[in-house]
Image 1 (tube, rainbow, N blue to C red):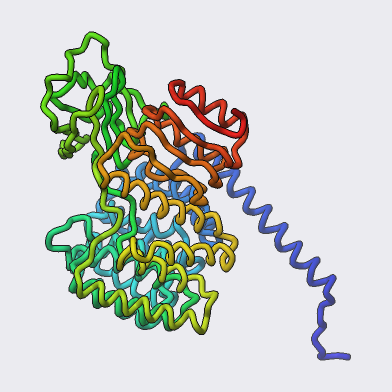
Image 2: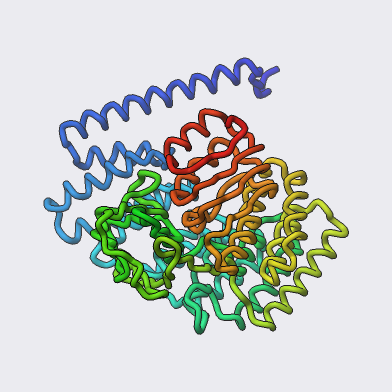
Length: 514
């Protein structure tokens, strides 16, 4: 038996590991106690630097310790020479790199590294870019490193063209590189801006080549989401930019609505057709500081609007003094105006033809993989980009299938279908130009209420036979001009209806409880 190695039993190994863990925990608690004691007495000295170093070396994710190290830097700065301070900075740069070898995705280590460089008199930003390149060779999807690279590349004066080339190389190595796609979306608008429309991310010529790149990536691995998300960005699916949405003055109530929530009290509103008054007099319909719909009581002794011209202009000036204008026309008992938004980008013929080719490719892929969720969603979005009115029913059909195929996100698909359905109805209502006509949104399987700001000037809205729940009703408080609101055959509770009735006192609400 002599000369043979003794093999520990499972029980012995478990006991040994537990003893090691207990010793480490004991040392950790003792070190943290000492650090807290020294911090409470403001002993931010070299001993504190060494204590934090020992703990961060094994666990660089204790963000409080990085904060303490920065406090030590501030405390020691006045007592050190310029050369000693440089050495201290250099030492921490080396230390953070050691920590990143322990955990390359440590928020604290990356942030502290940037802080040290910002506080050096001679930061080498180009060296930091090279450091990121090395780390991205190890893990090309380390989004912490990608974020840091964007920061240091700008500091180093690296050209967007050079960074775009780097992104392209990384994507070609691995299409499933979401961070590289994201960085690409930040660089392209700088290099290839749209010639006439600032709301569009890039020019159409570059858009065509990007669509080809993303299609190659998407069809290489249809189950990976990175390229599909990037394609959605290319097609321009985003929230509406800030603008006036609607206005109505009827009797002693004025209502103004915006495409996005704003603090009207920090802005300016003007129009020479009625006394709009000081913006401080306007009230948010939801009671929030930021809201998309605001109301104001018009004094009964205000000058009559009977002699006003048929069409006037409402002017809104935001916090940055950007002006937005909307035509307001004479209506029964006052004024009304609704500004038709651009729900989708309108692409040129060449790009549309390319999108049609991509839709054909998606349909071919669906023949082989009919339950590919990313292909189904992208096909629906492509239909919208090509001609959302013509393909409306087909796109909704794809969303309904996604509710089954990707059941964990069924709520998202239902809300997206609601958004598209409401767009169709209110766009027709706006284009017809009869703002006294009711808005009929019944029997559309709506689960949420989008674009309520555009409906804030309507006098009658039918939301019967949908899937609205209690949480959906909060947005309906914007409908201050609505006289009749039909909510029958929706799964909403009596208490939610009663709460809404309190907020819409001049509205007749039809429900299953009335």
